[in-house]
Amino acid sequence: MDIESIIKTSKWWKDAEAMPDRHYSEAAGVTLANHLEAVRRNLRLLQPFEGRHPYYLQLQTALESSGITPDWIQMLLGPVALLHDIGKVREEKKVEGLHPLSEKAVMMRHPILGLIAALELLPDHLPGRETILALIEEHDTPYSWYRQYEKTQQIPKAKAWAQLDRKIDARGDGTGLVLLSIFKIADIDGHESLADVSWFIENANEYFLHEKGKALPVPDRVAIESLK
Image (cartoon, rainbow, N blue to C red):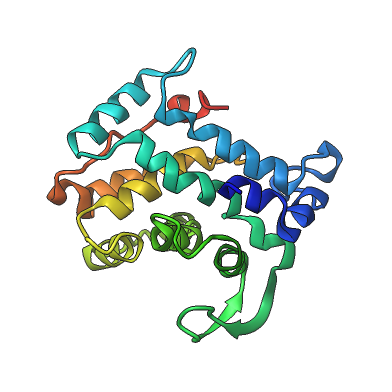
């Protein structure tokens, strides 16, 4: 059974099909599973598509110059797209529990529940499994950092960017932040504000990716919205 089938035949997915997606009004009839599917579809940004904004050709060129192939990114981000928000079906924001890997006390927010789902569903031998798990756990970090910036005008220091990159990809060569940046572009379904996407990529470049020779072009709102 392929990974998508494993996910979509799980109890997690059945619950996602029954849960209204919080990005939309309940009257819209959009389920959490619909949202996860939409993010998965947005990964077409890695391949040519009709009406593609010029930004995505620039992005493809930057990835190729970094030695990162679209097929490899698609392999990793496909499961992330289908699982990143799936923890919302069992989220308990004010309940403390144990992190499933570190066993440290954490709040049972949806990225942690998504990680638990991924640990349960993804085969141990799956290529890139550790990176997929880290992306699911950290997928909300860019938004959290942006929200903190809005409040304090403080941007995380270079050390924090390096730590985030290394958590996603142990090589610490910028690949982790590249993967998270691509996912940020894809994960726009139902989002009114897209400012955090450009903010994250711009600052990832400034504080880490330029140094590693893996800087990405920064998309404007028109480029990002062209995926919808």
